[in-house]
Amino acid sequence: MEFIRRLALTVLICSAGWLFFYTPLSPLIRVKPVDFAAEFKKESQRPGRTSGSLLPHSSNTPTNYEQYVAYKTEGKVLKVKGNEWETIFQNTGTAKNNRGASKDMQRRTSPQYRGAGFYFYASEPPFNSLKDRLNKHLDTLYLLDPAGQYLKADYKVYSYSSFQIGSGLSDYPDPPSWLMYPYRKYVLWIILAAIVFYIFLPKKKKGKDSIHFKTWFIAGNDICFVVLLIALPFVAPMAIMGGAAQVFFTEGIFLLPVFWLIALIGVWGLVFIMPRFASFEIKMTNEGIKAVDVRGEKFYRFKDMEYFQWITFKRPRWMIFFAWIFLLAGRRGSISFFILSTLTHAGIGIGLKDGILFYINTSNPMGQSVLNQKAGQIAEALRSKGVVEKEGEAIIRSMGLEPAGIRSKDKTDLS
Image 1 (cartoon, rainbow, N blue to C red):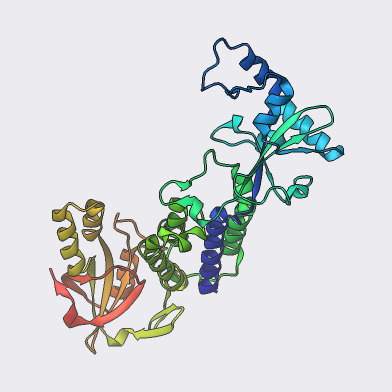
Image 2: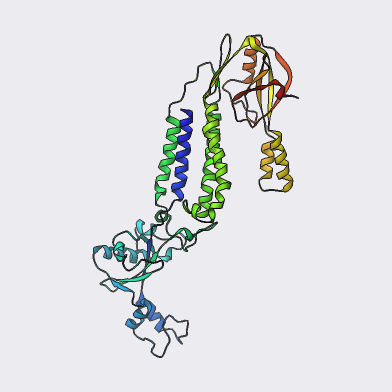
């Protein structure tokens, strides 16, 4: 069940990250009210028309409003009528003039530049009736209602090439995120479902007198794996590209080996390592110690124990070697890597007469006990059963990715 709990957590969190950045690339139509009468009046009153004027300049320069509109629209005028179009003209006009614009119209503006216009799906009525006139990127159409009002409609088509590494969507200004990323509204619910699964899936009940890892230690490590080693590396390429599927069909694909390798390591740690910690418990009996985790159980008899000894877990030498190499090379993140290579934590080992050392992690690198009972109580229980304490401290080089383990006594160093 511990495996299923963390597998469900991983799948749901990654699904939430994917949906947050996934865009179906649905075509959009941006509309903006155009007041040709005001523009014509302004241009007509400008002294000394130049080549930069909005009015055309030739021997037959139009001088009346109708000619001006015909020139500006280039004949791309479509007369529309009906209740749906009337509502669109009314809402866009009201929103532009800031006369109590509705929340829906406010949401349809670009977060980068609100004056760019209002965005709608091309499939939304009544805009779906324009599919025969608008079918290419940046196609423009001027909509004219019976009252003589104009709306400029720009057709916006997006593709994988519309996204650039580092900057995301290259079109300026960006459309509203809820139109570009319509599945984000489900992300919070998926995350809540992941939390519910994690908390309420049945857990194995620990024995009343058993020794096991504290709940905060298990939950804290699970959170670190999910957030730092799975979710962030998983969504990082999508955040850099501005889209989920875009990563696979653009230069963003080169980001995947870097970030998703880290995410795979996180999945391995959460799904295969943490269930061992969550299910681990030690039961002290009159005859010996029974150690249980998801892989099964092992029994160690007191009469087979030669001694017990305190242990310090240090990081492997290869990790320390590479930490020094990265530090001397001045690589980014080398200081954090070096600090990580110097971490130690404590444990207790039990030497068996057959040359095997059975060891248990008892603290984290900050010196806090991670077991529900202090290590001293385990040592006292061993003494009461006649197991002698060996002087000195043994050193085991390990990444600390197991609650307990066994190894040959010859592979431990005495400090």
